[in-house]
Amino acid sequence: MFPRPPAPAFSFADLEQARDEGIAQGRAAALADVQVQIDAERTRDTTLLAIAERLSTIQDDVRAAADQAGRDAVRIAETMVRTLMPDLYARHGAGEIEAMVETALAQLPTDQMITVRIAPALSEELAPLLKQRAEDHGLGEQLRVCGDGAVAPGDCALEWAGGGLLRDQNSLWRDIEALIEETVEETSRRTGVPQIGSAMPAAGESHD
Image 1: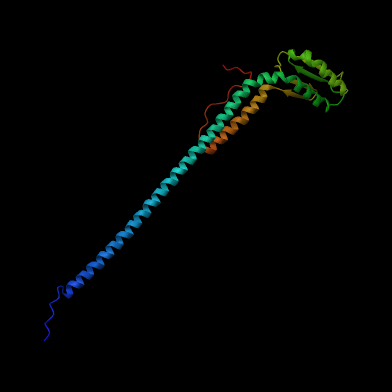
Image 2: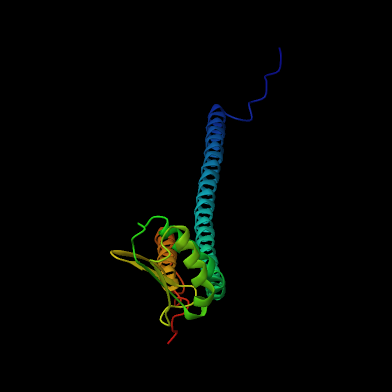
């Protein structure tokens, strides 16, 4: 007869328990892998959100800095023009006054009496030229040129019955200032960045 085989080292219950433990361990390992993936996705999403928020902040900072630089550039240009304008205004005033008067003469009737008030320093230079322009338009007898100490060099007041024209540096600067302030304030409203500095006195005005 054949010898009886040895008794098994593990019982059926042991095998069932080992199987169950293996399944449980496999499930636990799978769940751990899933949790790692979930945690990694959360970390990734959190990181991307933080980066997006930081980029948004940087973009706002860059935009605000650019807008402030633009306002500063306007102020610098304004200061430079204020420094140069009085001399340029006076230097080129004669030619511009002559052009203004000639434009008016071309549109006025020949029986209109016209008075031109200019700075005394320009009267000697401009009076003959303006009289000649008036004669060219048939208004030689109607034009009167007066040197007026109240008129700044480069300014001019052209007057006739029922009308007139004015070339005035201070009025020009008030218009420029209004445009500059409107531009700067609009930029400040758009960006939420308060403007720095304020308008300077118009050229020729007192700083007191």
